[in-house]
Image 1 (cartoon, rainbow, N blue to C red):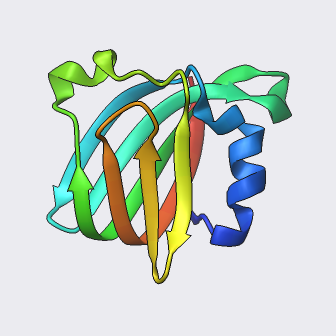
Image 2: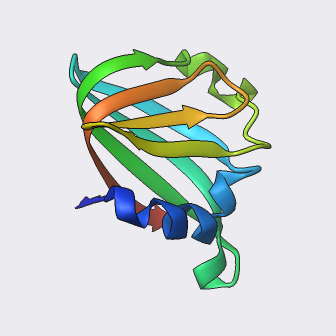
Length: 112
């Protein structure tokens, strides 16, 4: 996993077209303050091949998550939002109640 800096958000989101029409694959609660979330999307840097991106949120201060058996129902047609909110990172799936606020954010690319 490598840190995702606020200064990289624009290029990161554009590379993956804001995760539009992607799929929420997995949410894992590691502890009260650590959550991982796995999405699949197309990568413009790889000729729009499908890839997986795993986000690791640590120092979680607030979250609204989706039950594992309902992940396939999450509408990803409008993608995600990422922003730096003071000292915290804010992640949200646009057409969903799913969001996470944390003090640290890392990501890892994987195969589809």
